[in-house]
Image (cartoon, rainbow, N blue to C red; front, side, top):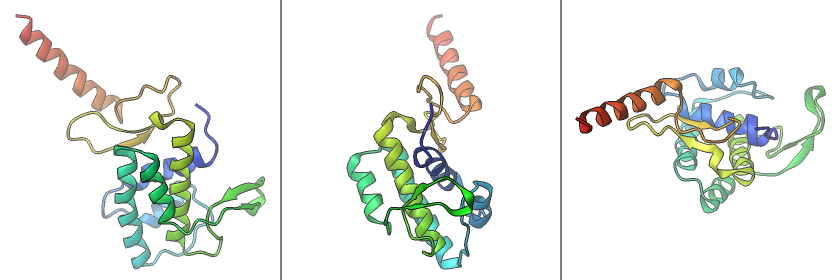
Length: 168
C-alpha cells in the first residue's frame, strides 16, 4: 500500500517509538528513522517522548477518532508547507524551531491520524498473547495480524497442537 509521507514515515516513526524499550537512545532512534531536522534532545524532552510513546500505544491498541483527535490536541500542531534540505514542498505540523520532542509529537500524531483516515485497519498490534509489538500494515492485502513471521508461527503451531489433541 502506498502511503503519503505522514501516513507512512510518520506512522512508522510512531511504531519505532512505541516498540522502543525504556532505555533506548531516543536521539539515535530518531536519527536511524531518518527524522529531519534533528535537534537537541534534553533529558526532560526524552522523558516526554517516552510518556508520548505510551500514549501512542493506545492508538495501536484501539484507534478511534476521539483518541487520535486527543493526540492531535496534545501537540503544538501548526501546519505549514516546508521545502527544507532541497526536498519538494511538504507539510510540517510543528514549527521548525520548536523543541525536538514537540516536533516529533506533532509529526507522529499527524501520521497516525492520516493513516487512520486512509485505512484504520492498517494500524495494528501483534495478535500473539504476550507480544506487545505494534506495526503499520503495509502489506498488499492489508490483513496482517502479527508483528513477525516468528510470532505468526508460534500461534499457528500452538493452534495446530490444540487441533491435533482435540481430534484424537
